[in-house]
Length: 428
Image (cartoon, rainbow, N blue to C red; front, side, top):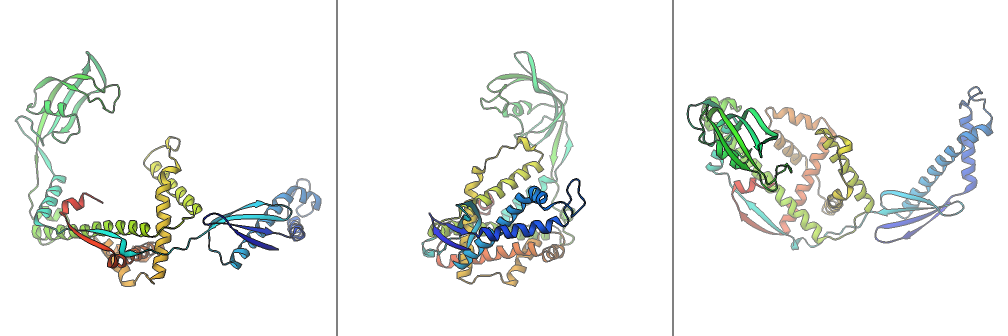
């Protein structure tokens, strides 16, 4: 048995494997003999079927197994002898009597480029009192209640209406409702519709026209004008809760009241701001590393990652209620993302090895603690991570990435850019 290795285009290699036909035949016969001791064929007791019949029934299957085992053994011996780092799976093809070729790819040699050429913009934002108050307003609106009022409806009020819409005197599908709830000003319906309801009081009826936009999602209504007859059933004004002891307790603040609540909000905003800044930095660093470090990416690994991304997307859509036959996705959609993921994985592994970057235990624990802080019982979350090696492995990978980012930032061209927290939160 011998093997020769050819270098093809890029990362592709081809190994020619020469198997000994006599050895293959001998192994096939050996396995058939072993199989015949227990195999059961119709008309014969187990182990009593003639060898020729066993060979006729199972010969092709056994020969395929023997060839597969021999090719795998020969292939791995060949690549090990040449110290080749195989990426993905080989493709075996016959090449004559006793000869086969195995075409495969190898991992690229990744030599990271000049880190000094990488340019990074670092957002700088501080949590202000206004940011805390803005968050408080959001929390209050999430707990709003509505009280009935005897006045004309205005923006912010919740109203209930009956309405019937017609086009050219004919009612249309979706144009009628009873006790329809609507908060004026939220934009859930067309502006002309909501605007016509403002100023109406409970018990009042009104007829008005609404023109559907030319790009309206319901094509049969797009560009048409409908006449609506609406009756205001009720008007409820929004009442926001006061920021007091009870409000703080409703948000999990057992002691300290509004002051403690604001401290917690500020701490959470600061934590989220740091997370987003780190995410923005990491994205720029990864883009920069790829830009200064060109290398070939194994197509086989990209294909595997593409399939993985597509399967994940399909499973996600199915979990959301879509039927499999209705899911129309193409692998081409996921290929750019897959190529980037594979390239970054290869680059980061090479960079980490070259600079002896690992995941220090204290940083791993700090990362786990950070994740746990937003939960009611952080200790349970910490235990959950440390009970599973796979979960902890994911955290360690994050720590390695953070360490890579920190090292790159020490050598890259970094420009600080002041920004508001509101602007920062508006971007991932």
